[in-house]
Length: 485
Image (cartoon, rainbow, N blue to C red):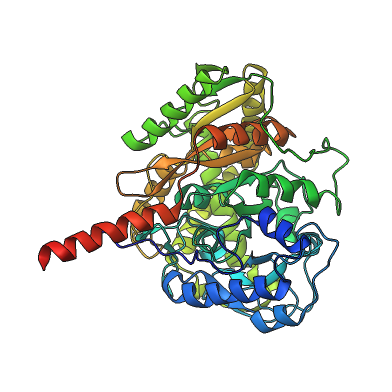
């Protein structure tokens, strides 16, 4: 029997509002910062024993801080993913192999994030070093999906996604090196934008990579929160190589040419429910006046092979150089089986590294070239709907797990390699009552186009609401009990 959804939406100071609405109420004096903070802390305290979504908390420190009254998101509670430094908190990277020490200083990206004035309540969970597509550590309890707790919340920004979807906070930090914002957004019914490479300050990890595939961002419940966040972040830092991202408030008027892709780079066919929702969105866009055309994924299965090797290379680097740069005592032998397997996979193919890097850059160029023919590429986020907990656990046979992961996440990594923006949007519910997401990709620097299209879809196809599902589940459960009685 399916479990009831887990959420904390109630008539407290947070209510059902997104971050923009909460900020507006704060500015009008309808609610105080202390009331908002107390409500969020109470929600986190109540939810986390069921969600397992927080790696650590700093509730009392947050209460003692004075909000930056003129900052765009002043007084809005949030969490940071546990892979960026925040002064006074450890950075554990979701790994039992690391005994982290407390950070002495904020990281470079952390300072940009904090410039918006949000109140950080703690850090959110992730799989070990972000390598998996589910937040199920081998050494502890899984972070569950608030919509259906027996299912995965996705990854690697899984803890942030679970907390936002369940109503603990309206907005939470995530980062994306292969789909790590978009995948949990799809699993948890959220908006997740991976911005263009270098749109924000890069972390040390991103700068150290031969090809920077990592972008920073947030998970939210509304397009306007995502749009406001990315606009306001430019006031702290803006890359001179990218066009200014305006504050997008509404759908655009330009009708677009949209290419629809149904099969991933691996050739994996999307399952029936995923294909259905993508087709429904395509038809919706056509009815709104956009030109919708079928297209093949711009790169082939050789991209999946090259990205798999790059994925393994990152695990190899952590395993063999982690002692030099990680914040604390690092014991490589305590890495989980997935990390060990990825490192071994790379070692067997390490001689291909120069060719792999050349290939990935070529794949990125080919992907960007497709936007000479279409304005936007529409696709699933994942080839299959959200898996049950246990399906992608890291402590199983590596070859079997790696095959599952390659088939599961074939749509998202290409935007990371190309550096182009991509957004995940909720588009419906599966028969099991789980969110189904769609992905829209555009060329370098075209977040504005994606956000305008997202507003249009949000209006035409209102996003699923977890409280409505919870009400239906409660009614069904009550009916079953009354029938038994």
